[in-house]
Structure formats: structure tokens, C-alpha cells
Image (cartoon, rainbow over all chains, first blue to last red; front, side):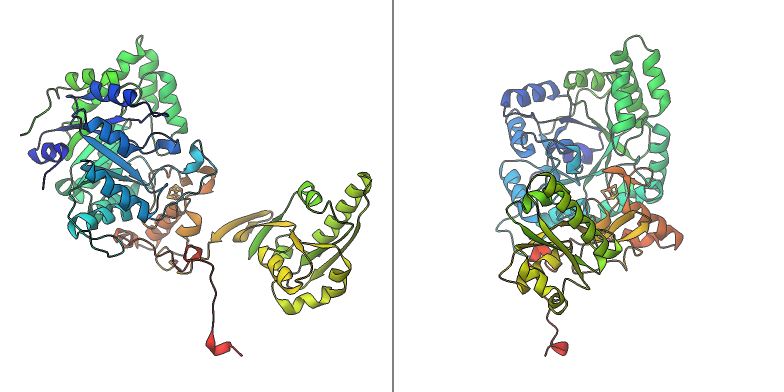
Length: 305
Length: 222
Ligand code: SF4
């Protein structure tokens, strides 16, 4: 059984860094390759989003294979929105056959947000069911329906957590549930409200979850005041405090300030007990990732074998 | 109850365009209570259609009638003569009523005059909410009497998802997040620990996903 690079990094105890890549609204392989080349060497794995915000894009698995061919480790996202358990399990087998090892289980934004708002939302499984399904496939070599797989599969199962969604009191318990279902690692929603994140981490530690699962804290570097405002107002389950917006407003060079904020946050996150890494989601601003990683003191990335 | 909404008049007019004699058939049950397809609405619809057709220079002979319950064969007999005299029937009952009519009066076509919207209840005057999907295996005992299948936009069993904020669903500020309500109610009854249990994937076969359903009870069969 071979482990993914991300798993090796996390098991070594080194502070992990993952990146994110949004597949194109086209079949342009070069675009995927271009972004992967920018991230190469600066992150331990790259998430490939699965029709994020319900907008039709190239398949996360296909794009995962494209970056894998360039020597960049993919972490493919699978949502519950578009496929039932037959489609999902089939895709997992196909992804593993292509050499993909990290799979992130998410519920998926409702189709009403996207460019096919009349679509039927599948949601045959929910995200926690999805985690346990993957665990069953790997640990018991069995499909959800009980049929045996003809050979074992090796996957590193990821899940997401959003400390900024409500009800807050329940959020750490929800993480506990994902861990109980079989999550091997966690990536969080982007953090701007550090105070709330720390309160959530306190509860996470109280429940001992940080000892059971490595948590990668989400970061989205801000490019402009408009982008910050947009997230504050329009993105479900996100909190952008006013002080962040004010700080950007006051800055002459907004982009530089956005990078400063991201770097400061990453440095601070490294001091929080139970935070095992960061997940930098600079979609459409991939070229900034090397600078952030370097300035946060996280470069070079570890190499195994 | 079953909640419905009358189709726009233009749509009904288009459907009955080829016909000269039309019967508008209301139902005295759910759609009367939700003010979409009872006797009053049947009369109003008949009148509106008649005026519209007269204006269009294509007069329509239209009658209205309401049966006590359109979803059972025995109640449909009271309309027999009017059904037979009409070229076509427009039913203001739910989809069940429309189909019962087409089965009972095989030689006559009954068209839908209503969109059957959902199974639900009135929450205040003029507002109805959906709260059951008829999934065939009730989980309300696990969710404090709030249905996550019908009332969570993603029918989650282990919710709430990451889009829940300020008690509202990510889909719209007009939708209460069902899981927020469930969590709050669990806290109220000191039962939040119940939520730690990982619920297995739902068996959808008792729901419509298992194909059209039929219930047979030997104890009451003749
Ligand atoms: S916000 Fe609440 S109701 Fe809406 S999909 Fe998420 S859990 Fe379900």
C-alpha cells in the first residue's frame, strides 16, 4: 500500500500546505497544466474542485490526472450533489485506477447557485455518508451495498469543516462525526474571523479531535476590497469581519496587503495547537502562492522517497 | 394536506383551445382548504375562461362543478352527466384527482388546471410550507419532529451543511435551515448528543426512487 504525499507529510508532523485549482469551463488541458506548474514544489497536494458553486467545469478527476502527469499530487473533491452512490463509487474506482490517492468528501453547493439551476440535486448520500462509504471501500473492500471489491484500494480520505457556519455550538461535534465516519484529514473553510476559528479549535481540542485527525486551516488571499465584500455578503457559510475590510481599504496596494494578511494568518495558525497545516485557495490567483508559502516560512516543501 | 396552485389562465386557455364545451371540476378536500381548487375557484376559473374566450371571438360553453373528493371513484359519479356533456374536463384537484378522473371516465379527457405543489400545511394566513416528501420511512423520531428529507434543501441525514448561517438555508433567506431548527430543538431538550451518531445512507427504495408505490392491506381487502 502506497501512501499519498500529503499523508506522508501529515504523518511526519511537518506543517502541511495544500493548494487549490479550479478546473476550466472548457477542455483546455494547458490551463490546468499552467496552474499546476505554478503550484508545483510549493504545496504538498492540490485540490481539484468538483463543479464548485454548481458551475459546470472540467471533471475534477480528469484534471487530477492531468496534474498527476506533471508530478503534482491531486486531492480530488467529490460532491454528493451530482451523482448517486453508483456514480460516486464508480468514479472513486476510476480515480484510484488513474493513480489518485487523496479524495475530499463534500456535500456541494446547491444547484440553484450555479449555471444549471434547473438541475435535479441528487444528494443520495450526504457528505458524512460519503466519508463512511469510502472508508468501507478501503477498509472492508466492500461497496456500500455489500458487494465485494475484487481488489483492495488505497485512498486518503479528506473531509471539510466550516467553523463559520451555524449553529456554532454544533460545529465541533459535526467534525467529531466526520472523524467517526472515517475522515483521515480535514480542510476548513477560509478563515478571516480568527477569533471564532480559535474558539472552534478550543472545542475541537476539548473533544480531543486534533489528536485523531490533522486539520488544515483554510486561507484565501484577498485581492481587493470588492472581493472581500463579495465574500462577506454573498458566500454561504463565510464570515469576513469588518476590520479585515477596513485594513484593505486603508492600504495603498490592496493586493500586497491581502498577501500580508494571509501570511500573518498562516504564521499565527502555526502557533495554534491542533492546526496541522494550511490549505491555500488562491483560485484565479495561483501565481501568488509561491510568495505566500515562502514568506510564511514554509518553503521548501518536504520530499519523501 | 396536499397544497396546489392554479395554473395561469393563459396556460389553461391554451390547453382548451380546441374545445367548445368545458367542465371545470373542483375538489372539496385539500385544494379547497388551500384555496386553489375548491368550488369558489372552480366558479371563478369558469367565469374567467368564458370571458377570455368571448373576447377572443371564440365563445366557450363552460360549466363548473365540485365533487366532495376527487381522489376516490365513488365521489365522481355526481358529476357524470356534466362530464358526459363536456368535450373536455379541466380538474382543479391535485394530480391524484386528475388521474382518478381519467381512470374513471376513460372515454373523456381530464386536463390539469392546477400545479400540485407539495404536501404541507398553512403556517399563517396565505402561507403554506412543505414538510413531508412521503419518502416511505419516517425519521421524525430522530430529528425532533422536523423532517430533514423534506425541509433540508439537500435532504441531509447528518446535517447541517456548511452553508447554514443565521438559521437560514444557503439556498435562500426565505428558507429556514431545517438542521438549524433540529439542533436548536435538540439543545432545548438536552439531546444534542443524539446528533453524534453517524446515520447510515438512506434506503430510498420505500420512496418514489424505488418506482411507483402501491400499498396492499390484506386485512381490509374485500
Ligand atoms: S443550509 Fe440547512 S437546510 Fe439548507 S441545505 Fe444546508 S443543512 Fe440543509
